[in-house]
Image (cartoon, rainbow, N blue to C red; front, side, top):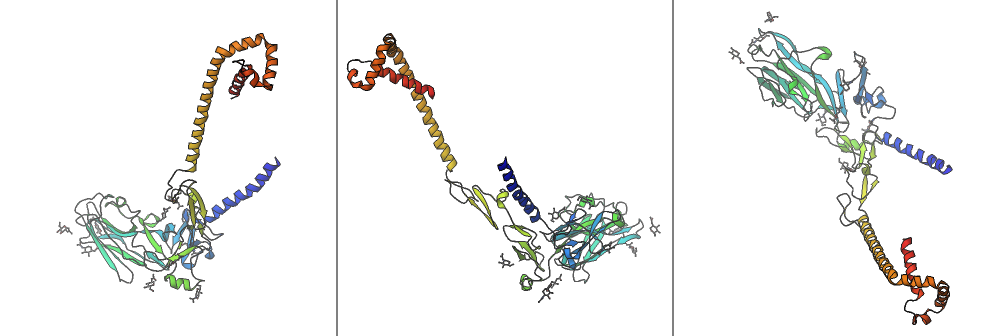
Length: 429
Ligand SMILES: *[C@@H]1O[C@H](CO)[C@@H](O)[C@H](O)[C@H]1NC(C)=O
Ligand SMILES: *[C@@H]1O[C@H](CO)[C@@H](O)[C@H](O)[C@H]1NC(C)=O
Ligand SMILES: *[C@@H]1O[C@H](CO)[C@@H](O)[C@H](O)[C@H]1NC(C)=O
Ligand SMILES: *[C@@H]1O[C@H](CO)[C@@H](O)[C@H](O)[C@H]1NC(C)=O
Ligand SMILES: *[C@@H]1O[C@H](CO)[C@@H](O)[C@H](O)[C@H]1NC(C)=O
Ligand SMILES: *[C@@H]1O[C@H](CO)[C@@H](O)[C@H](O)[C@H]1NC(C)=O
Ligand SMILES: *[C@@H]1O[C@H](CO)[C@@H](O)[C@H](O)[C@H]1NC(C)=O
Ligand SMILES: *[C@@H]1O[C@H](CO)[C@@H](O)[C@H](O)[C@H]1NC(C)=O
Ligand SMILES: *[C@@H]1O[C@H](CO)[C@@H](O)[C@H](O)[C@H]1NC(C)=O
């Protein structure tokens, strides 16, 4: 009882230590900072509420209640954030689509051109976003604010086109063009050839937007769509990429007080060719921007990702895997040979077989003896029982000097003694 209590009092703190370790290891924010705004996670270097929760002002975000009282995370003044990825270095924001509408006589009734500028180390992702225009008399154009870049796409049709996700957006009801990398400002708008007069039966509005290729569904944009306003306005997900600072790794490492990467992390360059990001070293996982964000991965807990056919042992930044006794090779790739378990099993099976054989053999002997006993010994017994007193004295004598009597009597009592002994032995088994 006392032992049990002692065991519990020893083990419980150890167990709780383990669980505390595991939970703190996964933290994505500075200690004491809010992890989420509504249901959007805010990983460091981003931060909300307190300026000290963000790496600098560029990463400090506004988390306020919207009109319905739900917390809303905003990028800049008015772009709602739906996702922040620390690993990919992206922020996904909702941006209203540009549109242009006409009535049947070709008079423009409504239009909206989108224009936005990112402040800080942020750029529109050229790999994730695509510029798209929807309409049948539609000319979508996109430029940056300095007009150092400009592109346009044209979409025409003479009859209603069903917008399907399989439709490759090849200029009939829909057209697309990519944007160059490194842009931090965008302007997009729409124009037409004949004010939609030739298509007014089925298409009165054109739309243009930048959108994340992973979430864009063309089927969401029927040609019959007319615009909505305010918070119901049609918006698309736009992916914005961020870097720590527009510096090279060498420049960044030179100023240790401003270098953003924590312990067990290193400086990397994103695909978007400006500035640097941080990445946990191999064997570590977590948030590389936090001082001790990168924590050792316990590879042994994830055998699917880190295979091990032998004894797995976690080490700092790596793991070892030794093949079981009797096998050889790299345990991470696979072990060859017969394992000790197999050998033991084989030996065990052999011993078992030998014992069985021995037992069978003994039973055979016993049976034969019984037979002999019944044939010969039985007679002796009978004879013995008749002269039991005589036999007792005889036994005493034989045990003292067996060789003397043996010659004269072919079936001595000593033989019967042996047969009894065998019987007793086999019974006890
Ligand atoms: C939370 O996420 C769900 C699913 O992504 C979304 O439908 C919902 O509107 C979000 N709620 C808030 C308050 O952002
Ligand atoms: C956050 O946004 C709201 C609404 O746009 C604004 O009133 C408030 O001043 C902003 N707060 C900060 C800290 O920028
Ligand atoms: C956020 O973005 C990352 C990377 O783009 C993605 O893996 C993750 O599933 C997204 N999360 C949500 C809730 O959309
Ligand atoms: C189109 O708008 C103009 C100007 O507002 C108006 O004069 C004309 O009647 C409208 N056409 C139709 C078919 O509504
Ligand atoms: C289109 O409308 C504009 C004004 O809204 C007008 O100046 C132009 O002439 C019209 N073009 C055609 C082809 O109707
Ligand atoms: C619009 O229709 C008119 C007459 O039907 C035709 O002359 C003109 O070429 C058409 N415009 C386009 C862009 O198809
Ligand atoms: C980053 O720096 C490079 C070279 O110093 C410059 O050409 C580029 O415009 C900068 N990018 C941003 C977004 O400031
Ligand atoms: C290093 O970074 C700190 C903090 O950002 C800054 O105050 C300081 O001026 C920088 N030093 C140099 C040499 O750039
Ligand atoms: C860190 O990254 C630099 C270049 O980005 C590389 O030269 C260096 O070997 C890396 N250090 C470690 C420990 O991975």
